[in-house]
Image (cartoon, rainbow, N blue to C red; front, top):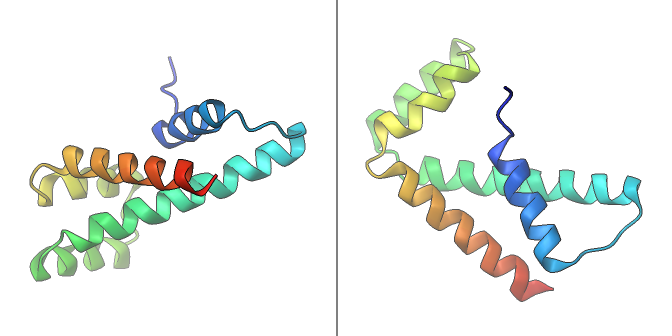
Length: 101
């Protein structure tokens, strides 16, 4: 069974709760842009929690073209309470999204 992308699921739920109605092609583009924004936000949040050593290790991973699995496992291993911080970042994003509607 393939697990759904959690960012896609988050965006789908945001759009549904906001009752956004667009033609299919526009909805796909809208959700893609929203997913890009969420991914950028999570990237910034994640990098902000890394110390100098963590940043250096992350740069090494990027330099060696690390696998997706290595990148996914990197942040939880280097940031205490990572899942809680990501959950908070998603909550903040949702709050800002709805405030902007």
